[in-house]
Image (cartoon, rainbow over all chains, first blue to last red; front, side, top):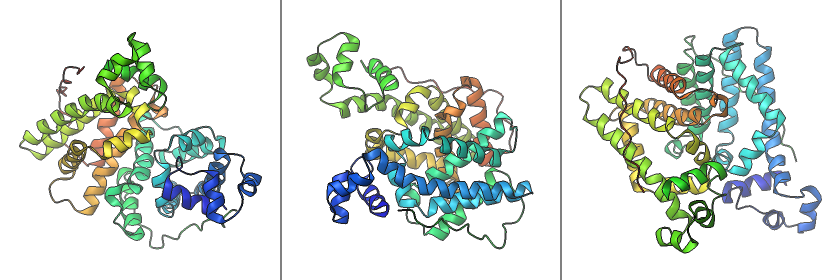
Length: 189
Length: 189
């Protein structure tokens, strides 16, 4: 049911999707949908939660690294993979006020955003370092959803975003030979 | 009337503002408002147009520079000033779908976006250079509207954004001594 909701969000936007449309899409009654989701907010929560769990996995893996360089690489590659695996959804989410409200009021999202900032900027960052982390993370999300880059395949976009993030953060070590992906959590339903 | 509309957009969001509210705000009848604006879209256009005129002035001034470094500095400083003079409005605009639709369908906006890209990335950019320009421009807009930086005063935010943009673009020349501002166009009404 969550996968069907993702498909509707991608095709019609969050605002253009109703619980009735979800019932029609999967061929059940509206009552069956209401059994799981009382309203649109519940549906948004169900779609966002698995992505935040995946982000939490990335952040935890990065925090376990002992070297600063490995912390930054792990969080960058994990976030870029997360963005790339959700290019369509990202586009639907990026400008939606309901998604924004949902994200801004979720304590787990605020906690993860702060931990990503700490990983990118280091502990006790100066204002300048904090701003660099903000520009990097916002820039990656916007670029991944940019119509100007929609023609790139996933590998090209991944490579480009990673190279640019390292450039902004002034990471001079060579690109790791094995950029192993952190596997996505099994789909929730 | 446009200034009153800007104030309503800032306080209530674009979606939360109606023509009736504009009439109440300036103490005229709804008919008087309708004389100028048929609908919300007209109101958005009236608010956005002076900002795009100012962006056009910045882009033209940058294009007239003969040295590449001066072109980049002129467009960066002009855009950063434009963002900083509209911090409140930017916050109201950033996630609004009506604003996004309006921007995406305005030929003058598309033209200006391409010219800013050319100024930042140079003519015939490689993909990597194009992506750097995109991350820079999106990153500046998002950072200027970030709640994490809302406590900075205008001068601090301006200095920080300019330093970071130069860092991303790898500009190594010293910061120009006189960062003279390109004056905003006189307010439209």
